[in-house]
Figure 1 (cartoon, rainbow, N blue to C red):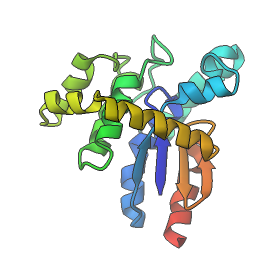
Figure 2 (figure 1 turned 180 degrees about the horizontal axis):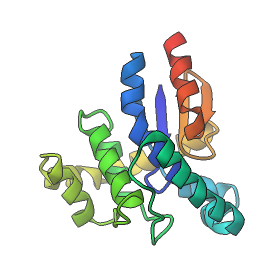
Figure 3 (figure 1 turned 90 degrees about the horizontal axis):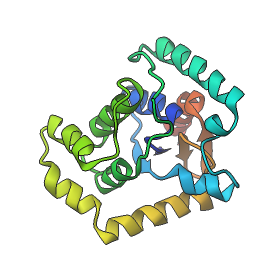
Length: 195
């Protein structure tokens, strides 16, 4: 099962925090697919998150996120003081390490910084702190994530998302079948067990 997400996406927070345990329980392998939502939104004619552009939707989202965090037993939702947060660097790092054993804990900690602690995730110091907390040497990972090759790979990944019909995050693919939204994570896992 492919898991498409962006660290600036609040509903991706819910899925990042749940997907590893859920997939393990059902014997499903997760392929992490970090990408950038911003270019997809621009292709739809939006210059910001729909939760910012439509105030009513934004107010609803804050209430819904608090409910969902309670439902799943996650750390309390804290509306980020900056929303959406700039996620380019952590997405580059996640792309660079998407096949590494540290991908899930890295993503979880970045999401917790953003959505439970209301802390920045955009600088080398921010991301380096997360990597170091996982017992990793931040310098080579940050350097590898910011190479021209990895930057190009992220542009290609985001274009791939567009070509596959992704219009929001989180999105999940089982084969060519797409499931959109945190509320479809369980359905995607169930489908993957049948594949």
